[in-house]
Structure formats: C-alpha cells, structure tokens
Length: 194
Image 1 (cartoon, helix red, strand yellow):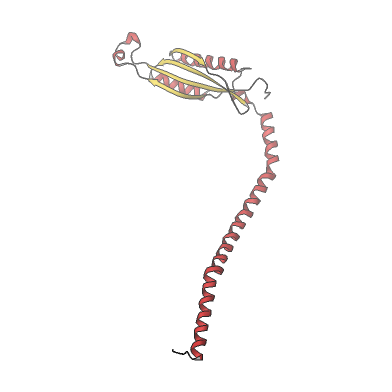
Image 2 (image 1 turned 60 degrees about the vertical axis):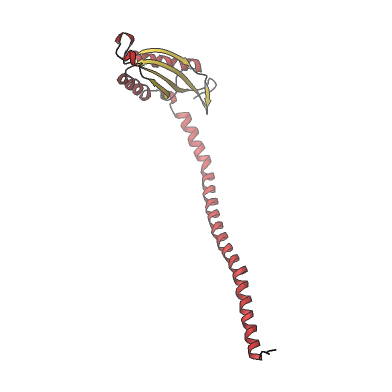
C-alpha cells in the first residue's frame, strides 16, 4: 500500500479540519445568526407597537370625556326623528314623504312601516314607499328627501317601467314609473334622554 508522508498527513488533517469548520459554520452558526437578526427586527417592531398602544390607551379617557361632552352638548334634533316612540317617528316619516310627493303632484300609492331595528344607541325606523312618478319628478323627490333634515336614508330602490301597451295610453298613466323604496331615519329610544 501507498504510505503518506508526514507532510501529506498534516495537510489532509488541516483540510479535513477546515471542511468540518466550514460545515459547522454553514449548517449551525449562519442559520442561527440569521434567526437572531430576524428576531431582533421583530422585537424592534413589537416595541414600536407597544409604544403606540400605550399612547392610544393613555388618550382613551380624554377621548371618552370629549365624546360624553359632545353627546351632552350636541343638538341631535337636526339628525334624528322627533317622535317620542318608533311609531310616532314612522308617522313623521310617512308625513314627510306625503308632503314631498304632494308638492310635486306625484301619486303616492302606499306606505308601510317595517319593524323597528336597534342600531347602537338609536332605533332605525323604516317606511316602505310605493309611488307613481315621472323620472324628472323622481329625481326631485329623492333630492328633497335626502337633502332635508332630519337626515334619512333611501334604500332598496326598485323602479318599474310602464308596460309597453300602457306607454302610449295617457288615461292609464302611461309613461309614469312605479317606484318602491325604503325610507329610513333614526329615532332615540323612549328610554334615552339626549
């Protein structure tokens, strides 16, 4: 067999040692170093988030005081329906739609009150309205309803065009659209004192 000289043995041992050190660095040290850097970056982000959360929680009592002051001092009369109960608020909505449709000579077919819904501190009052109008008058009615006070929400608008055989028949209201919509407003519950 071929015998290695002392120099070759030393050189091979040194090369083997370098391979082991390189493998140790690549397999263990380098990944751990990368994980450590990632964790340091995450810790920095978490410290920033904690600082922001502490700042927000410190300002919460002041914001709650301001909200309470606004609720006590604000005049919600311009924004909510005046009725003392849901039924009276619904009657107010029905009266409002009646007055607006009469002012434009529109044909109010029917109104129907939906069940009242509680939304936050208020009660949502919705009236379903059916009317017969031209497209120009419909635009004016919708504008008057949405721009007036107290604020109302117009929802679920369904517009039906007249039947083809009725379009030219003026005696049957030819050319008029049949419109159904929900008109909603907010009322304070009877137990609420604003």
